[in-house]
Image 1: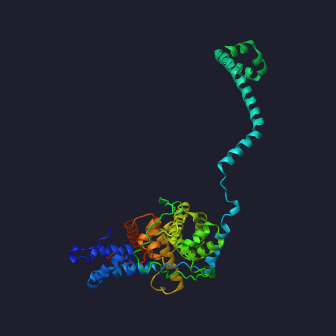
Image 2: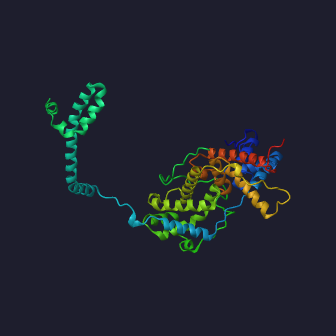
Image 3: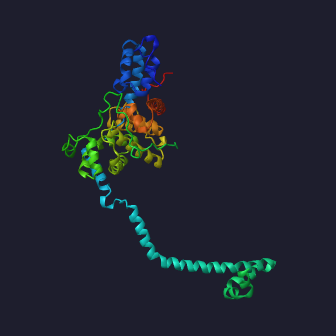
Length: 176
Length: 231
């Protein structure tokens, strides 16, 4: 991007292209120019009419940009923002504390003591579900074999669960 | 809508970047009228690193001193980027809460300046906010003022300011941020690059494209005397 050196003008000289690039990037005000380019640019300005014309052109846009109102930042506004930030700071007591691993394991085991009766009940329900499921394929298979009457047969089987559990064919299928 | 890349947060990884700067007068704030309040003056000799170490230990007094010291400039940066005072206040407030929670990760004695770190957070928050909101359409720009007859009047000046603001708002986000930081806040391209996670040539490219775009936009709005190409 930068072309600070112009071979034709010597080691410290800046070419017009580099000067135009500088103006396009930083504007016409030398205080905004990078330190390492300010001196060569000012040297070019001192002897180049074209460089001064380019600077004048860039200064016109600068003047327009400077017409943007600056932010008004009063002491009150600063104080209000600081006070707001202070009010938003996390309260130390509410900060999440890191719990040691051993304590976390102990808590988990302690928790299981309260949970196991419920877990046993859940296991019992699961076992009952498995038993019911073991009988369902018999009814479904039979239904599948009867073609169009299958849906009716399945519905009947599912709604008559006690009889399905204790029919001889169901018991036989359990032990096959 | 323009896609914006979220910049890596310095609070996630507080990098140690060079302090070097190539711009004369970059710490000057000619447009920002601020006087430091008594709280900051109470500890004028305490440097930022020391205050951050105290903040990491939960010292709210140190937080108040540091925040009071840097809030004005942070507000200026945020307002330049967002073009909205109320939103700038919210963003800076949010940035300070991040400083509070991440202060322990600050490396005291490093080459990075706290202000660069803070401004990077602020710029990231501004970009996030703008990305959520979408971009203000240029069609929303105010009526173009007649620059000649009423140029000296308060109304014309205000209208012109709003027109410039609208032209800036129409720039792609990164170009606008680059102009805000380098032109209005007078930061060096290196410093702006650290905030935007860009190289110096990349920032310079953004600046050049922004100036060309602004000149074109203002000319299109009927404003002459912006150094437009002669035909």
